[in-house]
Length: 154
Image (tube, rainbow, N blue to C red; front, side, top):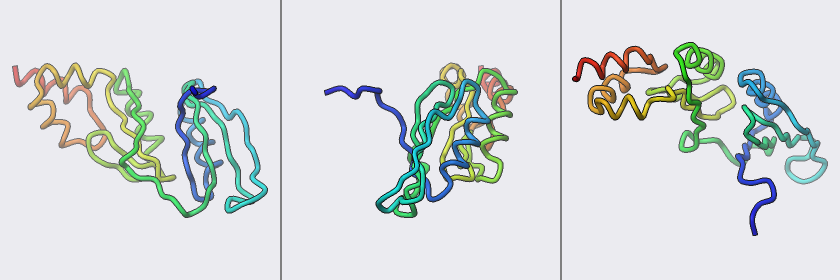
């Protein structure tokens, strides 16, 4: 039996689902809150389940309580066409969170993101060692620095 809506991410929060969803919807274009359902029974009583879209992709968020925590083992990749896009998404998602390496960050709600150039595979294919060595020195990715690393390796 196939899912009627298709496969989509389901995010578990501890009391901050609505705040997180409102933040995400403000960051990404073509995004919206579709439905908020108040939960009136069980361990999440008084919380909410929120259906929303980020750039057209369907998500569900739940204020389920402290039983489960997010982990960087699951992350969302944000492919960016320009340095301006990288700067925008990095700054908005990392604010109040934790900056990692190679374009990875954890937002203040515990969700992990990878803010990367859309052409990262192409850049890596040109000069894998040089581009990777440059990438490993970065938190927020600098596209021009990766391009230069590839040029210098040729």
